[in-house]
Length: 78
Image (cartoon, rainbow, N blue to C red; front, side, top):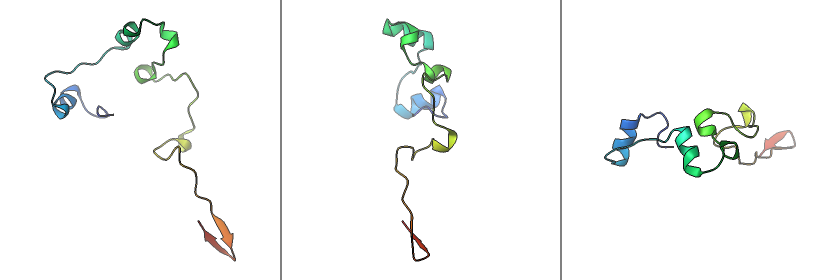
């Protein structure tokens, strides 16, 4: 999450590292000793192994229940 919108040098400075590098997709797959088809590589490719929710269901409140609203004598209450 820290790298969202930041370059390598900015992330390196923000965590106080002497150096910083990222694995390639191929490097990550090789490090697991598993076939790529058994791994989720969506962070690298944007291709997810499952169907994602529609845009109106995405966001920070995705897992929160909607607030119920009821009408009592012409007035709406939560």
